[in-house]
View 1: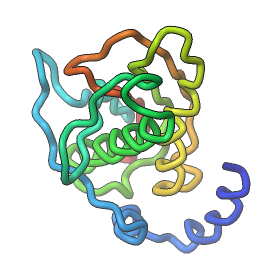
View 2: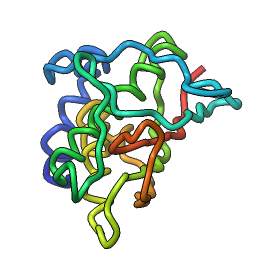
View 3: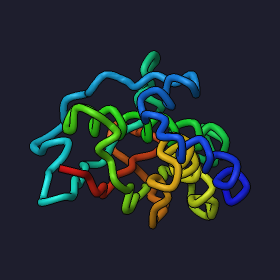
Amino acid sequence: PAMLRSALRPLFARGVHTEARIAELGLTLPPINPPKGSYQLATRVNDLILTAGHLPQPAEGDLITGKIGADLSVEEGQEAARAVALSLCATLKHELGDLDRVKKIVKLVGFVNCVDGFAQQPAVVNGASDLLFEIFGDRGVHSRSAVGTNALPLNVAVEIEAIVQVED
């Protein structure tokens, strides 16, 4: 990530708009999926947005399900985490109207549906962390937790929530 940061830093110094950056990366934000329970996708408190856990739903395709270490490889788990990062971006765009209002991705908490003894949760959640840096530059560098669990809702591979500082 350090080499990637130094390579991309000049791009962000020029003021490239976040959504143009997403398009430049060949990515598409998925549609907003309504909550799967009695909660809201995001809560704003002052200059922070706290998101609910988001699931790996690509813009085109089915929900990514399965257990890392049995049904899915680490690399497939990383792709699921990337899909979650894009879903988080879609929610932020819906809440803010413009992703340029994201001041800082403060923290991610990632949950990985994995087999007992699996110890590569950080590698899986790197899929989301690395993509957020690619999209937001230094604004996307964050603190993070990566936790393994024996099950997640709807048998998804990964669930990630975020705390994001925003501009008014």
